[in-house]
Image (cartoon, rainbow, N blue to C red):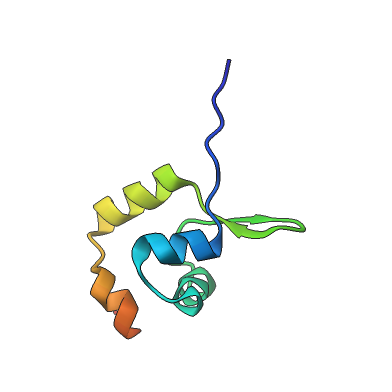
Length: 71
């Protein structure tokens, strides 16, 4: 039996990262965050991919909160 993990919404991800929803959309637009676009549902995020993304790139949450995202 396969256990399917629940996907996060934009709002849930923003709350998790403690950033504004609009910042999540900016990250999506810039293709800087792993996401899935579900037809009829909008953007979704796999929690394990977000965790990996945060660990690999060592993102500073304050960087997102201020809107100053550099690379």
